[in-house]
Length: 298
Image (cartoon, rainbow, N blue to C red; front, top):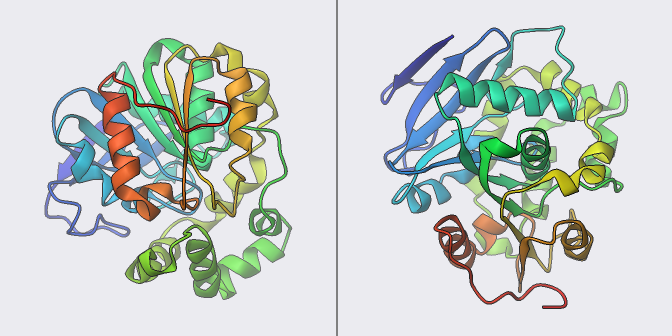
């Protein structure tokens, strides 16, 4: 195992300069070579982005959370610059959860809070189910983790040949479409991020992207929700076009400890679409305080 941190090294998919104070780093284990950014000091918080997002989708959230926490923003397996080294490893939901644990061990973090967005939220849930003692708090932004039909874009990517065509021939228009769809406020779409995402994808291991995409199933994650012991925050935008906000009720029924908030006017990328409200809710939750819930039936 090795950990290499550098504040001035240029890497594919490197954190944009406005993610103030973030240090680019690599942690290598027998299973994977993890690329991540670290910032701040205090109790640890792990950030897990949604599918196709990578760590720099949290570039505006990192400075907010790093005022009170040591923030680790990870490129999960099959995304960004993280490379799966053990080619025999199954990269389904349990495999990704295993790799999250492998990363945390590599950077010396035994227990942490986790903020997960979309599929990153689903992976955070699975990790919390399998390793309940390792998770102090779980903040989920429009998470995966329920055994429901995925958005048509992701179903398309799972198809043989079609997925390869999208990644190799139609990458930029696909990325642009999916980024715009994740926002309710069209004027808040970070157009410059499209080029960042495309550049990162072209420099990443596209076969790993499809391996993960085609291996993930959320049936076991939903079945085992009762195993989550950490306090849970559920955040959802009422204008989410990937996962409907009505799924909050399904999660809340299985996670009685969850504090749920539906954010008015928010899209799927809630931390970018409604940053002030989302950031405030996250800060309070991670600090161990609560706010009045605007969630369903509360």
